[in-house]
Length: 255
Image 1 (cartoon, rainbow, N blue to C red):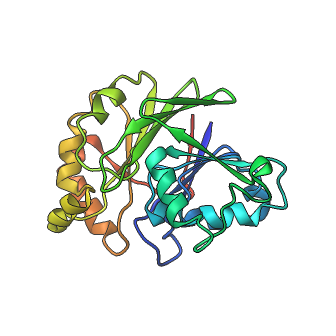
Image 2 (cartoon, one colour):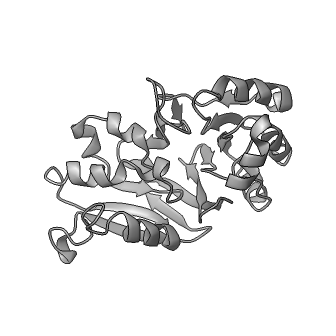
């Protein structure tokens, strides 16, 4: 399993600023932020499955354009996986014929370009020897994280989340965990904003990582543009024992 980071920033602006999207091999996306738009059309057409963590724009921005752009290049629907709550939100507010066409009924309901698969916490989807399991997240809207397992090694992506005691026992039970991708959106002086918006800041991240009972390489996502260096400096001071790294666009993980 090859996981390429198409975007991992908490905002846009500049060459590296692409919002969240992970490309798994050639055919799976985890989130569909602005990083997806950098892929050439031929690569976009290979994507068969999109797993959304939640409905916020920085995680879904490219999905409507993706479905439309490859519509004449595919002979099968794009399957979008998310919680029922997330699917309801994007159906009501995005694929509603006002913001964007509803590709669930184009060209017809029986031969649609897009199909939806509602997910439940703990559910595992198996795709060609790869498994993707839904993990709990705690955010301002219904949200999840994902556990990606090749059979040999695993990667966990928290998505957007804050302090979440239900998450760690599940992660600690993964015996082949190699990588943990966890968000930290704000520096410590904006801790109040982090709490209000249900994100993490460095001091909160450090506290959360004390709940990690197994060895894994830790990477930090969702850093806000203009504050990433400050936030990573604070993470190094607060959570240095765990040696978290800044997640980078175009970084590749092999499992």
